[in-house]
Amino acid sequence: MLTRREFGKLALALPPAAARQAPARIHSTFGGVMVGAQTYSFRDRALDAAIEALRQIGLGFAELSARHVQPADAAAAKAWRTTAPLDDFRRVRRKFDDAGIVLVAFTYNIRADFTDAEIEHGFKMAEALGVKRLNASATVASSARIDSFARRHRIFTGMHNHASMAPNEFSTPDDFETALTGRSKYLGMNLDIGHFTAAGFDPVAFLEQNHARITTLHIKDRKRNRDGKQGANVPLGQGDTPVKEVLQLLKAKRYPIPAMIEYEYDGADTVVEVRRCLDYVKEALA
Image 1 (cartoon, rainbow, N blue to C red):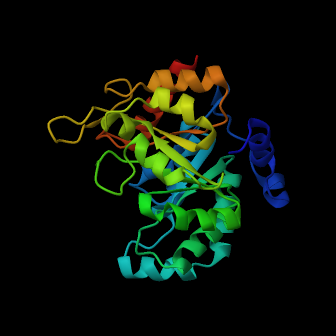
Image 2: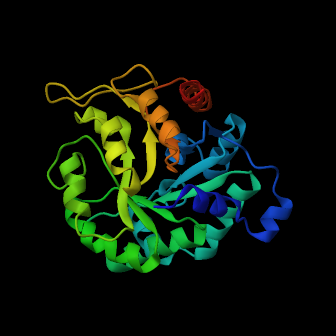
Image 3: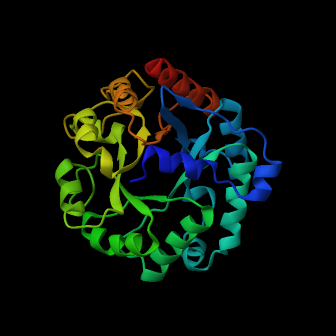
């Protein structure tokens, strides 16, 4: 993955026009930890409103969810995955630049039935966005196929985990080991610490052992799965996820891994709740 110095250079490398016109960068690095949000947190609003929410909250790093740029209709989305104009993504990048926000990753989920053209265009979208990280919900069996695209485009690609424990899904440490063994350095993990905890595993120990292969962290809190039922998403600090310990490990070890807040629990107002998440993170890193 990128070193801290390499990431700093990338974050500062704004296009010349954007650099002239953009307001001051929003600084949300606390204790040396880059803190931002996955735009899925703002799934209740369109992209421009999501960017404005990030700006209001004071988050200077973002991971773009494809749902903010793709059509809602399934048939239209399938066509979009191979025909979306790449200039659209360059314009999206400029929106983040103009808001003073560094775009660090693009989430483009890759289903097993995707054609090569759909996967290829997803990586081209990431290139047009100017990011070096692409995160994807995918299957363990598809890892070799995805790695071939990641190598060709030289984009660090993180496999996203859930807590479903279903066959061929990323849920356990063994799933990650199976997928990554024998693959290139460009295939890694987008570790969701809430899902990992809900599935019954320790994200602190896993992060310490595997930090070099992690693209970004998704910061959320969940209860552990019990009696065959999925553990609930809850506000930070109210579940079983060692959120504070994960953040403090990032700080202590100076791992250059962006920590992306992903708001999923039921709350009153999205901006209020994401700001509440940020306050918790800042306190943990103080």
